[in-house]
Image (cartoon, rainbow, N blue to C red; front, side, top):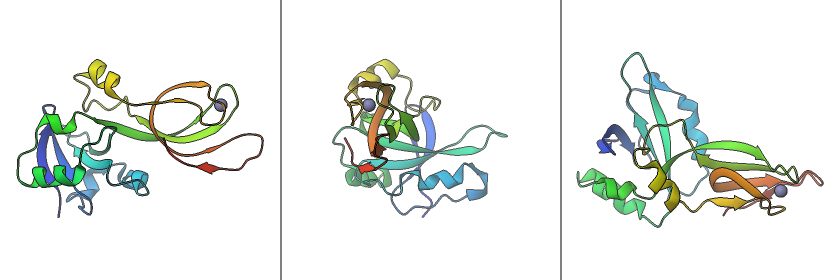
Amino acid sequence: MNGYEIKIDGTSVTYLPPGAEPADSANIYGRERLRLIDDMDPARTRQVIEHWHRPMPSIVAHLFWTDDTDLEQLDLKVAAGQVTDRDFFGAIPVERMDIKCRRCGTHIDLLKWQLTNPLLKSDFIERDKRQNYLKECPHCGNDIHAKAVYVFSWTPPEDGGTVRGSV
Ligand SMILES: [Zn+2]
């Protein structure tokens, strides 16, 4: 199964339900990054392939829903050709990043909005306001400004022990 061609916010993408494999793997930039969210909850994430004009390669985008959208229902709607932009109301493209708290030095392994990705950016201000971001360092509570939506783990500098957890 190679996914479904749909439009999100006016952009044509290939939607990959869990278990789907892209058809033309050789032409996808950063294919290894498919593993980015392997250990994440499939209830909150899906992958889509963004197709750009040649010679730009297609790229894999990882979408993360911060609201309670039922993604199994979404898979069914996509398969039935009934998907609308409303289904992506709570979604943003994400990238994995290690950031360092400016106060305590804790390293935080997290997902944040991939701001370089043009997908779902036409209503950026409204979409930004809707997101339930992680706003504080999980160790010291200092403000972080990363548009973070999910934390894999964090490592305080003083003991080196890694704490696994999420927001
Ligand atoms: Zn901190």
